Image 1 (cartoon, rainbow, N blue to C red):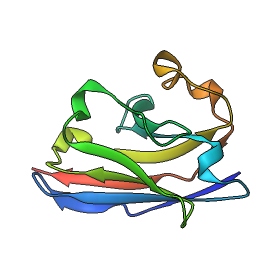
Image 2 (image 1 turned 90 degrees about the vertical axis):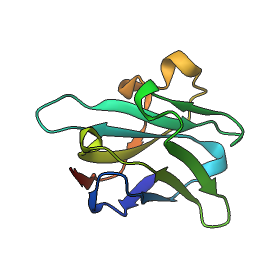
Image 3 (image 1 turned 180 degrees about the vertical axis):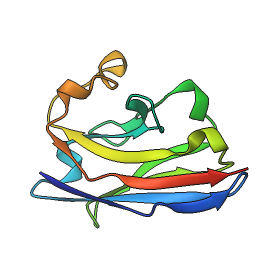
Image 4 (image 1 turned 120 degrees about the vertical axis):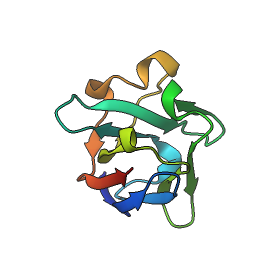
Length: 126
C-alpha cells in the first residue's frame, strides 16, 4: 500500500485545515487507517483512526470534538478534518495504514502499521 498525504499549511489559531491521504495498491475499505503527528522536539503520537468498516473512529483526548477522520471510498482517500486548531496542534502529520484488525488500545501502536505516508507540516500560529 502506498500512501500520499497532503493538505498541510500555516493557519492561525481557531482556523480549520483538512488533510488528505490518498491510498493506492489496496482499497481503503481493506485497511485500518490512522493519523499520527510529531510535534517539534517530541515523539510521534496517535491522533485519530478509522476502522476498516468505516463505522468506528478513535481519537486522542486532546483532539476529540475538534478533529474528524473520514474517508471517501470512491476516491480511496482518508481525510483528517481539523477544526478550532491550537498552537499545540503544530506538528508533522502522517497517515498510516494497517491490514490488521486493530482494537482501540492497539490503534496507537505504530509497529502495527504496514504503510506510512510522507509527513505533511501543519503550523498553527497564535
